[in-house]
Length: 280
Image (cartoon, rainbow, N blue to C red; front, side, top):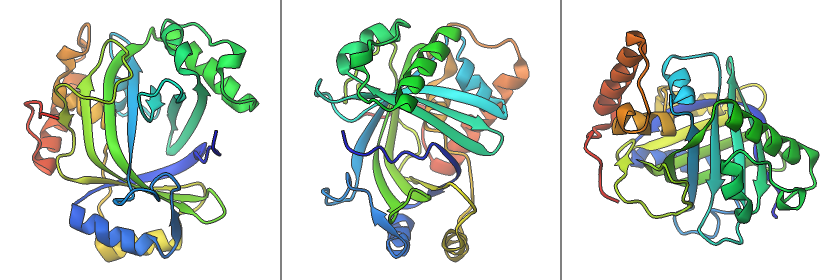
């Protein structure tokens, strides 16, 4: 396995930008960062990322985001293709106030079906001797069982990533063609049947840093007039698909439903995305 350069603890700022602006941002950041090794072999500098998001029948993690809970988490299983020799990454993305904490561990594809039933993979099915990865898989299974999570949505996009040279202190990603569809069966397939294009033609720009906000990032925000916003791929995908199509029941709290509708309207306004699912 290649070196895992995931930032385990970081701050992140998100922006929705046009494709023309994304090209200008690329020209700016390449003076400070280097292209991710996975994107270097692609003409468009981007590689496909697929994630299966897990949630409870009550959509617990979804509603925690809608309601703006300060301390919340999401469970997802990330994969980069259908080849069964490729690993699946069990990821916990947790927000603690303003900080983002990530845990992840890679497992063999053959362990996934049992893992989705809440069973801890065998030790030799975890593809790393790093105790942190083993602990991450254990914690993933624990949270899955605690909220009775099951497959809910398939999210995919094309990622262009730029990294700090010689360190992991800063990372800039630009995600294009973000798609989401309901996926209750847990199939790890890269094909879509009837997805929504979550942010239309807009690009999700994320600035991720482990310490203080870099001066060059601050200058980039100023030069391009970037406006920070929320852009949660799973949550906004469900917002467009409709909670009733994915949840066993909706919350009785009318305020939560109103917040979801407000987010839905804002997403329509900012991206021009229709609620009717787009074709792949």
